[in-house]
Length: 86
Length: 411
Image (cartoon, rainbow over all chains, first blue to last red; front, side, top):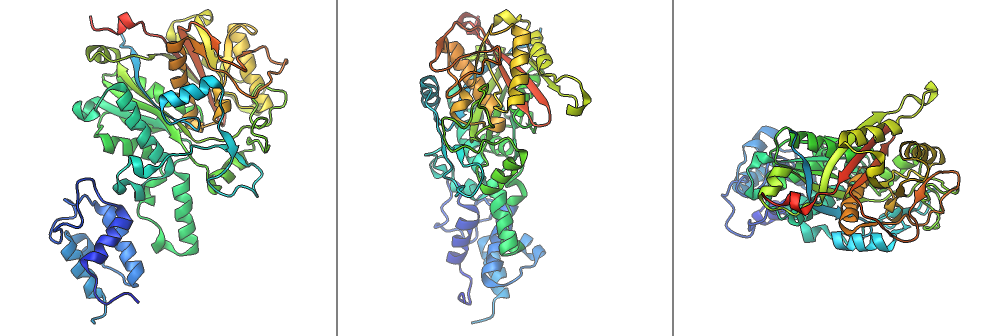
């Protein structure tokens, strides 16, 4: 089983696989509160990212809540509310 | 006066070369690229040869952001568009965004991408299907991705009419330039050498099932038995003549004339209409048959279709009265990509005064055609005709005209 906490590193791995990295964007920089828009990810990229997270963790993310997650921190928090506590 | 549409940039993606120089050198040398399929294991399929593009590494050309969302044909098209703009000496980002459009043709969309997602759907479940399947398979996706990459917001569309589409798209681009758009990148790049694309083609019944690469695709030969599929195509930077002149662009030629016809039902007893398409393209160009220096044939390599094409050419030009060639015998048929590649070859043929050869074919005496075989033939070319036909009786013909350097210079 995957670990019980979804981390920024986990998210970066999924983002790279699901949607790649925009030119001029450094995912290894301080991105936790940078908007997905500024990171070059549009709604479809986030849909694909969320779909991979759901598959991997066997969870189902609420579509409306997903749409409201504008930054890595907000998406990570959303995912963690769906994971069983450590 | 209607503005002229000039070809000012060429980008090719051919099994025989990814750069213009490499492609043209191979084409003049008669160096074909048809061989056993390597993109998947075709050994158990009835057709096993293809004209594949080797040595294209998408990662070398495209940002990682584009890789998860693009089919092979789109990756090739994006790299080809980059080369076409570079060849034209244009950075589209420097032009007003509504001045440049993109109009491509597509034969079947992103088949390999679609195949992979369908496999995921049926073997693992819907949650494994990429969100990018929503557009990555789509016919219009090459136009869309080229538009996004270069910020082109002029008239943009896709034409779907099988092999004829390669000319139909360029004709549509010319219409938009006549209506006031300064520049349109147009043509087609197709690539669907994957099991799904393969069985779709097999169903059409037009694929050669031979294993000898030199005897598999033989248009206008008594031994013709279907075609070998290839992948690739070309994109042309088309430009309003005044715009091209003002920026001192190098000019390959003018898109001088075009016509398209649709055949009557085969059981109607009426004649096919390719001849009318050729005559229409000549009339649209304002030239006589004697002005045409060479014909790039559709070259179906289906005896009935070869006969129709040979008869149409002989009726318009007279028996064996015009040199005819089919360099696509080196690449296989590229579907919508074929005619744009022929247009590129026609431009280079006019530039260099040479008609590239048809390879492998031994011309049948049954046809009154002067087929250029064996070696390139020197010829001063002012006008070249390109023919492309699509499934279902679609016939398109286009005339490319040489442009004198003095006309291209800014006055």
